[in-house]
Length: 627
Ligand SMILES: Cc1cc2nc3c(=O)[nH]c(=O)nc-3n(C[C@H](O)[C@H](O)[C@H](O)COP(=O)(O)OP(=O)(O)OC[C@H]3O[C@@H](n4cnc5c(N)ncnc54)[C@H](O)[C@@H]3O)c2cc1C
Image 1: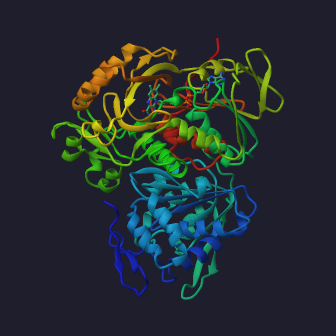
Image 2 (image 1 turned 30 degrees about the vertical axis):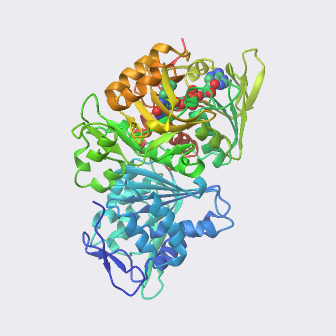
Image 3 (image 1 turned 90 degrees about the vertical axis):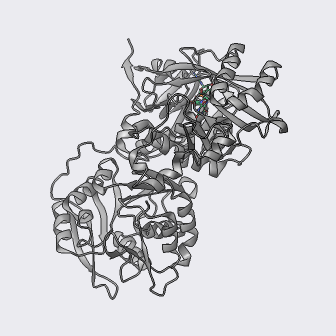
């Protein structure tokens, strides 16, 4: 359940929020807005301190009702000298509902437009990290749901400003204790400014022990004092894993213009890189990303496995991009997806039934009898309903990403090998001619990344497997409308009942076949038969209606080659010497590409990670030295 908040009548528009859990008010006697501006922004020297900087990162303990974030975002927007990118990382163990967050901002009309946007993205806040994106990707909020100490251990960035917030040290001592401050100190550099509203002795002592030099400063009446200071320990802080140095944007060549390459290019260009995207083909999205339409659906498992959590982070990232860049009904549609668990019923994590039920429902819940009936399935069929997802035409997303200012696409550029230069890399074609030079190279060529990694001077073998697949599609006649489900269904292959195919019209699409170790994308009639057989198990009613089109030869097919890693997770990481890999998207390119683009950019720039460090580490490419 979302955190319970009582709204006390204090004569303001929304009322004063009170926490029964902590027996404390969310706002100080100053009111939330003045506290955010005076104590936190001013206390950290903002907005002046971030003036002219390329990026700025604020770390906050205690998101509460999000007022400090809203005020910081508004100050960023109003500042002509603002940094290109504002990161705001906030921890919260007991997230409030989106409605309460919005209500809290009602008292401050100037914040309402910001609060509306925040409210729209505050859904599905299960434990873990959630990256929320505003201002076209220039304001990034990373909400870390869970205990602050545990959450901060999963990050490795250096904050520029720290806001210490939360209920009073008497009511919620955990958020003010030595261990939390140690975790905060791990995310600070020498000179990181810190501010808070409490001057409790225990807080000052614990901060001092962790290397913060703080002093009391006069507050605005009726508050006597606040605390301000900076991280400046008398010792040299030891970090188990020091974050990489921040680097300035420069030139980059991305090889491959499918989902992976286009996502990386857009993420880097948003940070000021000049990116060339080279592809062997004559048009973008000529490989697996040429799939007419694909499904987006989270992976679920009883233990909420790494893949399950990663899939949710990826889907949130893709939904944000689709919402911002694509046309609903033409390029994508968030219809919801029903998962018919044909092979075995799927158990949801226990915590989703009680403590986290509200947030979990935003993602996945058992399918209803009505939804099953719409698919022609019996009410007892094991099935899940994934509420916010749907279908996407991958090429639309690729083209939208490639249109990001700073990205230049070049076709008919088949890269054969990479040679080192004094400042970066030269990329050569198969005749040995130079195609491009750049400081940074990203291999995002699907299965082609394997050969490329081996042809990097001093390169390595990448563990990638080619998996050919074929989908079958046919025209959607009005007479089919009642026989087909009104939303896509997956579980044993899938059926997307109605997706527009340019030049053809509205179509249904089913598949796909799955053939390991075949890198050839040719069409095979047998695969269409196989797709129909699987549809007969997944959705018998739809299959019997569509069988006529199969039999009359009225179907069409598309085939492509997926590229997967042994662990079925994407491969995202560096091969050293400014060569990175973003590949191995498997059958979930729509789920992983946008997230991988942001993760690569975050790691390159020592920014806060959009996912927990543990998840990010699991994506490290499997390599072996070339023999
Ligand atoms: C049949 C089928 C069904 C699928 N269904 C879904 C689905 O429902 N949902 C989903 O999320 N995903 C699905 N996928 C997977 C998804 O399509 C892929 O994960 C995704 O498209 C991979 O994107 P990519 O950019 O890594 O690779 P690709 O799209 O293959 O792009 C690689 C690019 O690199 C270029 N290239 C290769 N070598 C070189 C070189 N040497 N020099 C220059 N350029 C080079 C190629 O021309 C190509 O354009 C499906 C895939 C298939 C085949």
